Length: 83
Image (cartoon, rainbow, N blue to C red; front, top):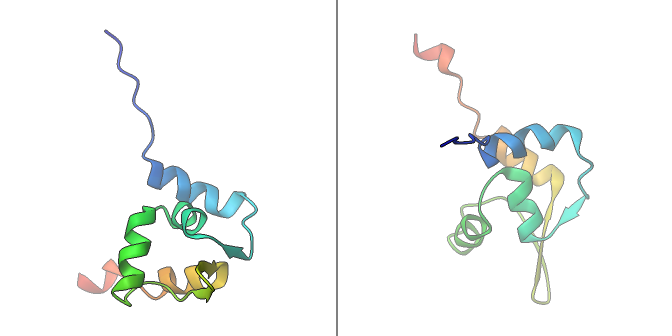
């Protein structure tokens, strides 16, 4: 029996982030795909007020690409300082 090993969706999403054209404003599903996270994670973090900045227009939630990038950039870990 042959088993195909598929790349992690998170790795695939991270690689696609730089090569794919992403819209300036994204809905939750698209923002989750851009970040390599689940839609549910974004919804929960939004409810807990711990996730990336977003805009709410009526019942529609939109994330700005630059805010998603800033959120990820602020959480970079520099392991070289631990040596």
